Image (cartoon, rainbow over all chains, first blue to last red; front, side):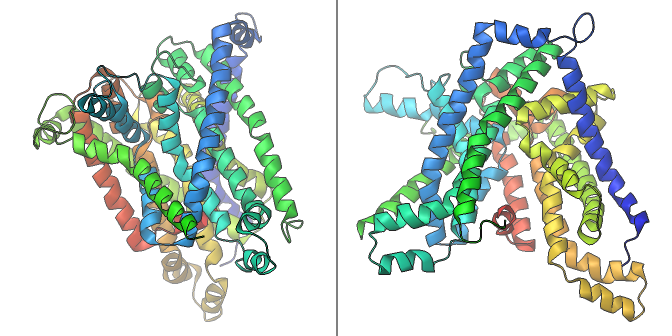
Length: 277
Length: 264
């Protein structure tokens, strides 16, 4: 088929969607900088002048960092296992939860960790405790829920890079007398580092933007930026404040993932043939 | 060295258990005969399923979600197919910017994306309407649709189309008899995947629902906050069955492995 200039018209519907998206981003920015008299940064100074709001900001990044570290730490061995035994069933076990709505998966944790949940009931029945422990509505509950929801993304990112590692490289290192520990730290880990960096980026971004899980497992005490935006918008109807929070969220996310991107670039450059890519 | 693999295997199974536990718990909880969630369930009962299936509110939310996901998935698949046909076959000025923007919904933190789409829908005066939700969902699922279609088109062999052309076939015939059949698996998987993403979506939808217009996941979210009725578990289980059926279809058509390959 010939693709002349007229075929560019086929792009129009998609470009229309993109223009719509950018209109949304644009009007969000305008809202955030809107003051009573002309443009102002009042919404942002309002944000930074309230210690509890600044606290939410740092708390969100703290949770994101914890969730990212846990996700990467646990998903690496899982990805290694899946690469060593490439069976469809393991892949399905990782992919299925991704297809189940976040609400449903978080609800599972509410049922497990709630005051009358499975964990508390079991511990009381066994006699280890005599009244329900507080397992959710705290940081621990939020972290467990978020790790559970985002770990499949981390596993898939690491797996995608890990399966591409040339098998002959660790074998060569081994035959030259390197210990298994050395093979791992000097060969396998550096080669799979780009996958780790991708996993960390994805999980960090997803955690920063999460609303549902911190809302259900954190409650009102453990507010994160996502839940704060939710409250500002749907409880207090403060559109300008919510817009300013959304912009600060996006800007801080862009800055926060820079280290992961630097690791990715550095690791890719050290790979054979990495210079060109 | 024998210990290593055994350790890894037991770790992996513990991790799989962790990943599956909350999902299995929801299924178990849906069969409880009591009015609240208790463990282990005292007997089995289908009464929460009866309650859910007999409830007009749940049924309406379900039908609304299906309609929304169907319209959003169909339209996005069509729109992205048209765009991908152009970007994979000819030079397009500003192509890398275009593809970056298509991926932007995935790169923005979800809460910020939700706010941006909320602003858009408010701007065009469609908040609380079906069309407003459709427009927002079109943008949310766009990156999930565009990439598989582009990958599908890249894999397919252009020389077949050229051969048909030299043999005198007209463009419409070539498209119907060669291009479309070859790209069909990618289109089907893009459609089903975007259907699932739209059907499960809650973070964006929660900002856009209307007074008596709510999607199933948003209804579940507000019910969890309001009550602890096992009916929520029954709805969630039904929702999962639907998703499972769709994953099964995806696997039959294109193989589930494409999810991993797409990320590489």
